[in-house]
Amino acid sequence: MSKAYTKSGDDGFTNLGSGKRVKKYSDVIELYGCIEELNVFLGYAAEFLCHREEFHDLFRQIDRIQRELFELGEHLLSSSKFAINPHKISKLEIEMDAMSERLPVLHSSLLPGGGEDALRIHLARTVCRRTERAAFKFAENTKNAEIIGIYFNRLSNWLYAAARTAALIANVEENVF
Image 1 (cartoon, rainbow, N blue to C red):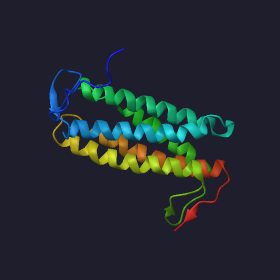
Image 2: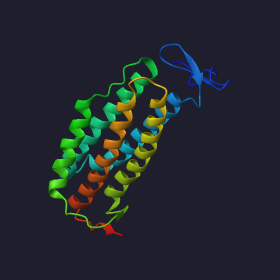
Image 3: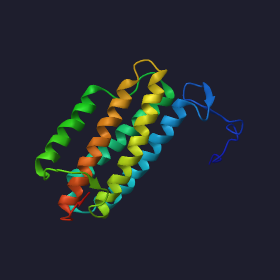
Image 4: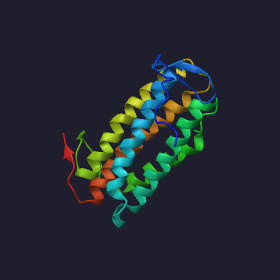
């Protein structure tokens, strides 16, 4: 078994998959860290959905998104390809449209809540917003990277719809502001 530590990052630099060393606070590492944190929050939300039949579709969608995020993180550190394409963004939009058809129309803002399942998804949504900001900062100096920011913008919208859907499925009233 290899050691869990290498000490190679003790100088404030880390290795990318390409072999290049970058500062631990570089835009690419900041984005990667945000993606990793978002994936953990999505996993936290999914863990409570996976054993309940009424949440099967939502769980399956979150699982797919987690896999997309993992793939994006791997590509981010190892190549110039970003593993995000317009098809993945369109898929989020199609799923949001389907969720929205079931949801009551809002005439004001929501306070995060709507039950524990919805709140866990709202937590992931706030981390997604931070990830979106990191993605657009990364895109300022990275060719063709705007699509990453667009993906996270759409994903945060998707998570809002998913949180509302979780409240609906659980039959928990949303907290209107």
